[in-house]
Amino acid sequence: MDLFTPVVSAHRQHPNFTNLLSDTDWDVREVLSEWAEGFVDRDGKFVQEFQLTFNSCWWELYLFAVLKSLGIEVDFSHDAPDFVASNARLAIEAVISSHAQGAKPEWRKTISDIAGGQDIEQRYTETLARLYNSLDAKRRLYQTRYSGLPHVKGKAYVIAVHNFSTPDSFQLGDVAMQRLLYDLEGRQSFLKNGEVSLPLGIFDRDEFTSVSAVIYSSLATYGKVRALGKSTADFIFQAARIRNNWELIPISANKKDYKESLRDGLRVFHNPRADVPLPMSMFDVPDVREFRIFKGQIHTSCHPDGDLCMRQVTRLKQV
Image (tube, rainbow, N blue to C red):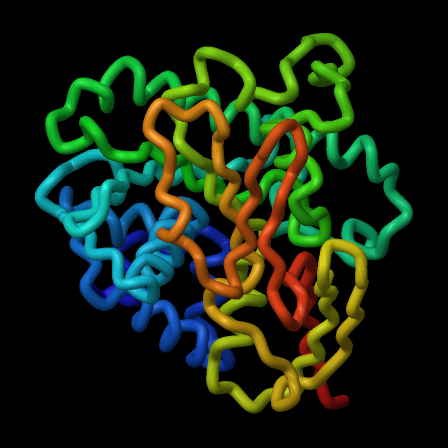
């Protein structure tokens, strides 16, 4: 599958796609090509959508690479959900949380957007609204269509969400998703745009028992590919890991000294009330952080080197 030969006129191309065509981004294209090996374009529109809308296709390619790394085989003979495993009881529907109408998209971020100083609770609330919309739409899709498909029956239904909702989404970690799914602080609800009340703790609601788990990331971004790519350009990585749920490990390193795996930053949130639970062993690897609820308490797996929760990449230019 040739992702990079333009099939869409330049003025219609997504800015992120246009950027990766540059000579300096050869390593980005190389990693994406590796992710795409074995991926089947079922309706013949994937390349066009990749060049037009970009982020949702990027997320699908990343998820496919993760599944390959775990030995989970995808049966592409089915048109939906996005990933139906042939060797596991698993069906995954992919979705991204994009910016709200009229809000600044992630690809237009400026230094002020990522320099800090914004009201963090306001940023979490903005993120909550976008995440809720994404999850609820895919929950409804399962109940109205996917639940009746023979190849989905008996399988764990997982919604995989990437957060692109704000320019600083890669800095916000998974706090909003924890609140949305589990509401351990007992807030019960939040206000979207200061007006519309939406629920928190949705995994405790009857309508969400059809969702076995949520896969989540805000770090499967350009920075991920920079970390995995072979370019020796002058990149500075600033990141943070959390070890044993409390020990903050700040990282500042150049490219040759920075290490990150494909799955670093990926989260799996298990639904304690799922009709079909996600098998506990399916994502049981050190670089995937899993969240479970037992007797009202949250339990998480912990990477021995710390779980990646934030990463920012800066390219140094010679003058």
